Image (cartoon, rainbow, N blue to C red; front, side, top):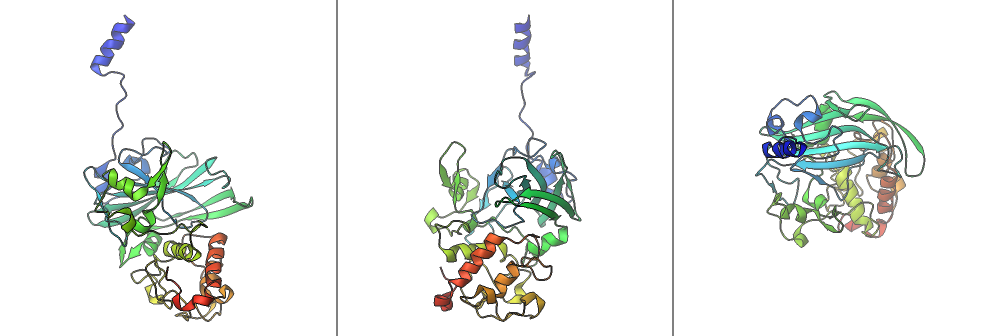
Length: 359
């Protein structure tokens, strides 16, 4: 009898596990943000550990430093839509695309996979009217994240890579702060997913490695990409196998150039730190600040070749004082490794000051 019931249930589809519903594209495209992250169905579990269909993980060769937070990145593209390749700037994402970035802290940075606490998930959604930014803050149980338009302050504690205990007042940005950093020619735009920062090797789940952009192309996510050798490539800032110049320029491009570019919010500074910039004066070499004073530390130039201790760029990176520190948003802690990298770069610049920035 039991066997007959099981057979009947199978014929009727009863008891069979139905596939989870896909991402709610209607909700993605509506102008008003959803009150909860889970409403979008970007994940198939409440803790946002398992992405839904068409939600694909990606990594950056050099990521932005945000107070040592671990970040996971995902991109969703609507069915039938593809990402257009562009050699410079952000890739050409289709309407309905969602960029998902979750910030989390392990209890001990030396063990990044253990005792991980999610603090926030940021979404960039490309609607018909343009990109919008939304931030969702996780509850203490890690089971739900709710919309926070006004930002938030969250106490965070962790052990850093040197074994030191760190207590941090973590800042979740408000919508205006999102616009400050993500502004390109006055419009909101993503920062990280550019061809040069995506063009690197990633590990495969079954073992081995492959080029990330090539993987996207083969999977039908990316259109128009040239052969791998013709694609621009950004260095990994912490890879000692790559040149000091390439690593320093990559670090500045990712951490500073979203504001310090001709189309960014700090364009009036005349300090342009994009990877494409080649003019030594635009990079700060021998360049006086637009406004002297406390923010410049009474130093004369942005970069004094061979002398990081006399360079405003290194001084502001090494500061944690509001009004002096750079970047001024997105961090409360000093990135000691980043400061050391840029200081070493400036320190080796003296013999080639006239060609600084070319690599």
